[in-house]
Image (cartoon, rainbow, N blue to C red; front, side, top):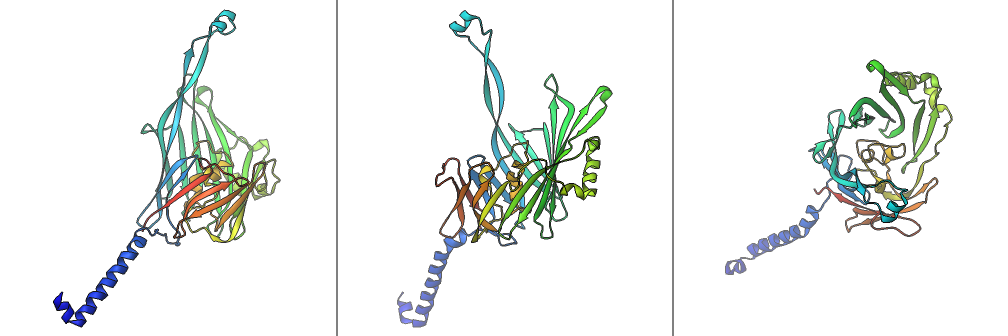
Length: 362
């Protein structure tokens, strides 16, 4: 230390080094907690926690592209248990026997993994793959979902899976900016009759949804189109070709349905800086039977695997036949959205109407 005092130049170098070290220590926490961004500069979400679905985990590859989604959940199977009759029931003789249904939990999870031009969806129950339904996600040339197919088997009178099955199709079309432009859905039932003869039954009712963008976000306009009965005998491939070749179908008035199923109100200055769509996150679910409304609440349609995404944050939503709600965002000191609150007339339930977001650290 005496040598440092006797050498002013050396003293300056030591002080300079100490200053640099001090600044590095100050910046270290900021560096550690910084969020990783993808090629579009969007913050990469690592998980979301919702009241309805608990936790959803996201994993990425070395190019910061989404490669896997894991969603743990609890399924149930039911049994019946005979219940003893009360003395009054025995005396009256009006009730011969009585049973109650008991639900047993099954630890389960659904996993989505991108493999080349498809997304493989696998459902596990007690760590065993559930094969009662098959879910297929086909990707197009733009790396967005092109088609989703659900094939469900039916049980026979002995509770075994028989040859009969149903199929539900969702086709996705995109505009030149790779934004989801419209979705159509149709279904069929495949039954096997005598001599194992296959009989096709196609529905003559198809769903057709337009996605309307306004620069800030989107609105979904749903309608159902009733076709004539003569096409019910077509196979599913011929049916799809028929729809593709006859574009006049989509100009037909809807038989029933809603115009603007949900209309979001968007902020004029608050951007969505995450890599997922934030609309409807609290209603995310993984039910195998996806209804026309629920398909837009499927987690895959909120990710980069689909072109449905808002540019600005929604501040509220108007719903036909349902209560409108306000959307409130809570951010940390670095401006990261950490929670989303869905408020009804200024009130919300913390156990139901709040979604929490975590990010991938740099």
